[in-house]
Image: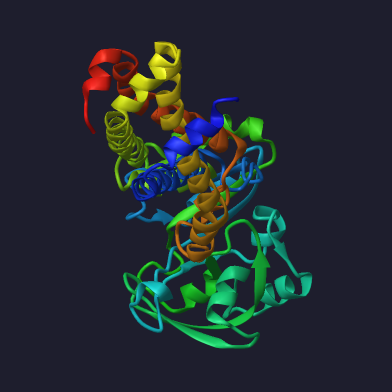
Length: 388
């Protein structure tokens, strides 16, 4: 620690260059932290394990095909199944086609939806009772309600896209849960609109199993039950179902990892260039230090410490900005988008902080290693002869 003041002064010898280099490290660390947190969020259960005993049954060929409603009764008879709710993604247009007015619109069975299926969600009993009793009503997540400023009794119009009907829904109240990006309305109200699949088909089945240990058995039973029918099924856990939307965009996890490696390599080169320039400008000074008794190991340690210190300063600022500005901002900004389920676990954890620290040290060591070796090998006579 007795040489720290010397290292600190050399880091800020060229303030403009140091600020620009540190700024590049800050931007890279912000991006690395955000991407790492996103990867962790994608790999965790969005429901915080509260939905670990829920399954989603979809058509084996994908969500573009419907399932017959006749399957519901057979699924309900499987031992261990507590509740089954048909659901249809309506995908209607609210106000206009602008992306900011898009939100999840799902039909459900209101009799069991909040009492048996999504019992981890919080909803006022009076609101839940009114929702069940009023066929053209809908409930929405609190974040969604705050976004559109819906008031109790307010009517909204949803113009169907692939389902060519328009729904006139009345808002009865909000629910609270990890994912508050959706609005739910009655299956029966949609059926009364006499669309082409009314009372015949559904998009998916959401179901709950009494014991999470029974999930493999129930999953296998459902898929085997319908494998030779006109509508074979694919049964997924809730986590797998939500992750499948990300998989539609390709190997997003692999892409994130490659992007992270590329930008780390780039910032390492930037820091290495800065350290090398600083070392070249101080050849005479380093030779004088050697004359005064500093050994090659001291010189190597000084240059390497400068690179690590510069990298750590940028990394620390980057982590602070990511933790208190960028990550909270992204969570708030996308709270009412389809990404909302993945943002539940989108936060800067202790493991991310440790990874950011190790990355900062690693960048500093890699960037400073070659300039430090070269500086420690400078011959005293050659250094003293050089004019800077």
